[in-house]
Length: 317
Image (cartoon, rainbow, N blue to C red; front, side, top):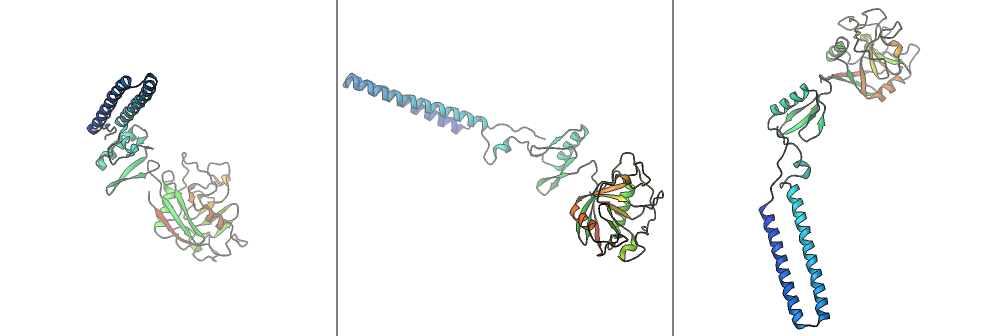
């Protein structure tokens, strides 16, 4: 991979132009000397003095102009850019010819855990790579060593996007992904909503928004093993997705809730009895969750106007 571009050499046409300018100055100097000689022979001293002063001023101006021209020519020779390139482009590393060259270059950067320069000279995190797209190169950011998938939640009140912590919570997040891909969540309703607390969803009985059994059902795969990894102590903060359970060990299944307040007392690593592991968070559409949180509910915390999950779409990393 070429990282340095050679500076263009001084063009022959520029040298010829400089020689012509120098020759013109010399001819003018000879002419001035001739005129001074003639004036001395033909005119009186005062007139000669005025003429000499004028000619000297002219000579000084010509030499200054020559000096400026030479200085400008030197700058042009040092910083000239080939036709068709911008000044910024001439200082940038050239693009590599193949996709393999680019990927090999980034492999070296990643192995050394350094930031990698891209093809236009900016610095990118080592977790960034190039993807060939036609005749041009498009930068694709990968995020973490393996980026997490996201889910698009299309509800009757609007659309939210959530990140799923598959890298840290493979059992819980993986269960959600499996159910979503099967269409399990499509058409269900939020069956329990409490302002300044949370919005709960995922019971198969909530397909009927008026069902009294809503909140009591499990997914088709039954209960899950509790997942409490030591390196994934995500708190039940506003906007996070957390697994619902009955309070008994390994009782979570398809139901989850979305926190709308700081509910750290529900953290599995807190001192309380509640153990609800977080497996995702809202990354866009938090205003939609606020709308859901503020719907009017009955005495059983069920929305009076049903809020439906129209469709859940998994977006792979």
